[in-house]
Length: 254
Ligand code: G
Ligand code: G
Ligand code: MN
Ligand code: NA
Image 1: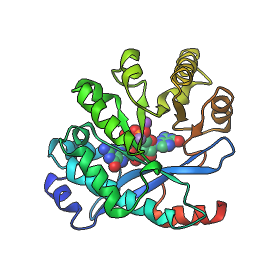
Image 2: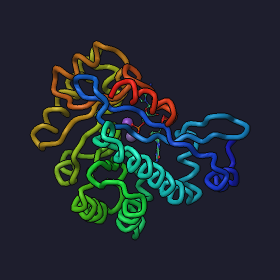
Image 3: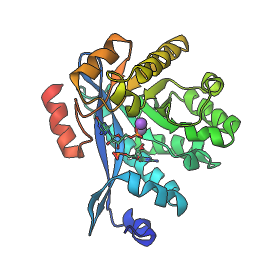
Image 4: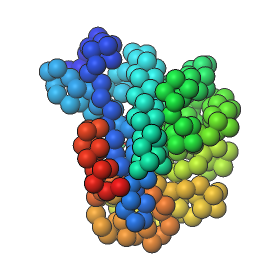
């Protein structure tokens, strides 16, 4: 079992690692990456976040861990920006609702950008529908403050949570990420297909770009592309990679 005490020390012991999953356009060119956290645990090996993010949230550790994630991702972004081949890449970072609820969230993000020298226009913050359970107005105010700085927002895991279309209309987001659970079924299940089509059409009407996640087959890719998705992410292109492996991929494709 994973222990809170160990997680508390994981940052200092440098056991946390950010992996990066490429996000591609319709021509399969890498436009950016999503940062995905891993814990290189001394006993359990590489642990994925679905098993420890909840622990981190319960223990109040998601705030310091989230700050480490943002800092690390922005440092990587700043390095790419020095390189003519990679300077257009975007960096997407998952933000827990508990982080967004911190009163200093806006300042923390601005300070991290200033400290690392990363360009705000290439940072995307991914939030989930769980923000609808809390103070939505306050979340929207923070999002607007950060969007004034050039930062963009994506709504992640869309369709799996509690959001209503009314909220979607109010939310200042730039991208909608269609959840893997819909992508899995589009070719076999007429209901998933109908929902995916409705989401894409709604996003278009709201002038929001659509990123499809969890794409595993060329058939899924073809369908999503034909039906108006803008960006694509999934094992068909690449899993999340260790920074050194991502570096090799970028060098070979740019
Ligand atoms: O990386 P996947 O492979 O295992 O991620 C599992 C879940 O953990 C996803 O829901 C993803 O959004 C979440 N996650 C990954 N990295 C981070 C992170 O840095 N912060 C937060 N809050 N969630 C993350
Ligand atoms: O919730 P969020 O969308 O942030 O989490 C992304 C999660 O989905 C990560 O755990 C990531 O490793 C996983 N993932 C990304 N692409 C694929 C895919 O094509 N297939 C599967 N099974 N998982 C994927
Ligand atoms: Mn995500
Ligand atoms: Na998702």
